[in-house]
Amino acid sequence: MADHKIGNNSERDGYKYNFGGGGGGGFPSDGSGEDGIIREQDRLLPIANVGRIMKQILPPNAKISKEAKETMQECVSEFISFVTGEASDKCQKEKRKTVNGDDICWALTTLGFDNYAELLKNYLHRYREQEGERANQNKASSHEEASNYRTEPPRRAALPPMNAPMRFNVVDRSTSLF
Image 1 (tube, helix red, strand yellow):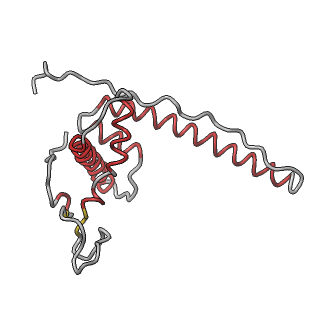
Image 2: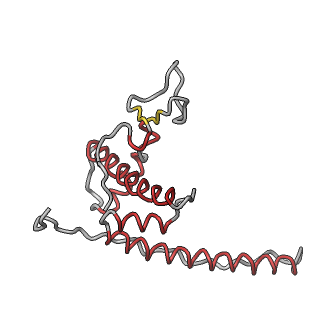
Image 3: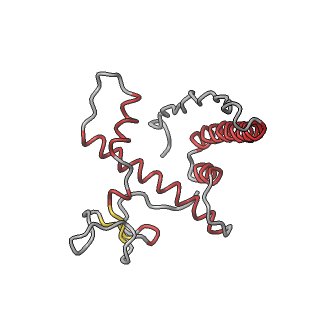
């Protein structure tokens, strides 16, 4: 397992985070300035998206405080950075520039999130199958379009959506030796 520090590390992986907001000179920074400072809103997931995901698991009449949303926003953003950083390190060692889904699954396993890695591998497999089917349908419809040019509109079969959401079970670690 990799040795990483989790928390509010303002210079993680060589990046400097500016938690104060905009850039210098009265102009907002785009997050890629010469000084390498990344704004907080560029580092964190949008809070509206975080709140929407949180609401999906709660009863319809439940409310979520701003503090709870902000706390979760920090946590999930740090988690994504943590896992992506591990996957990126692997890619750099292998002299690759693109992090792919398999790298993320590997990083989750390496960091001890085996249950999540297994769920994500299953999802990734289903996604790739669906993309392959979609590509085959596009090839078939392109061929059909060429042979029926200006005679009839192309017919496209709709793929069933991946309706089965990923389910994450809460693990009781209170009896753990950690």
